[in-house]
Amino acid sequence: MTTAARFAGRTAIVTGGGGGQGREACLLFAAEGASVMVTDIDKAAADATAELITDRGGVAHSLKVDVSSEEDIKTMVSSTIERFGQVDILLNNAGVGFSASSRLTMAGVVDTPTDHWDAILNINLRSVALACKYVLPHMAARRSGTIVNTSSISGLTSVPGADAYTAAKGGIISLTRVMASDWGKHGIRVNCICPGAVDTPMIREALAAGLGELVATRTALGRPGRPEEIAKVAAFLASDDASYVTGAVIPVDGGWTSQ
Figure 1 (cartoon, rainbow, N blue to C red):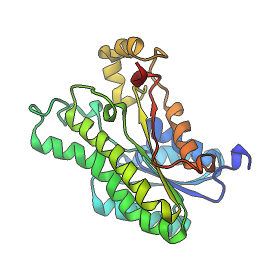
Figure 2: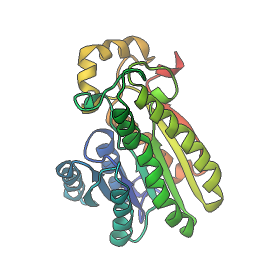
Figure 3: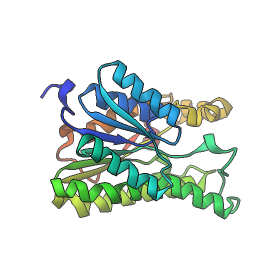
């Protein structure tokens, strides 16, 4: 199989596909043959990603999805099956972080209002569980499927200042491992990537405010990641190149967690 055909005949759902590493993943999946359901809470951003794909000769459809809404998640899965006939790949990429500081408190556990804590957990962790809840039975019936969950280095090591975010990302790692154990017998692989600092709109302001200097000294490679570098690891895990990989938790962090 050539690289260009890695996902030929397959359908991928990508949450948070309107920008950053989610958009890059959508573009990469489509370039390698997948039909892509691009979902994002920002419909215009999802539309723009889908348009980029179709302009390049690929197949995509866009859908507005609030991943904290169970009804939206159910609709996302059913709409994908209705349009494309199947779901082969689920990339749980959507999340909320420091870019949402104007509306959600990113702080330690004592200083995080309970309703903000719940909102962050709903968007970052509960959404992953719900998407898997509605995709797994479909994949199991076909005895085929792969799920890639997006955690963070915050789930692997102590990164102070956003405890709800950290708790959610740690939960994604544990959820990935147990689902890999439970669903492998049904032909489903479940893996997790843990990006470090990636130059996307989500943390661009933080990079400019001092995080960039920390990244330069803290990472072995001395720079933030690029969205396409995260997307390529997600694509590897979603492909048959990783056919014997499940339950893996892979840092994609320029060496941050190796220090």
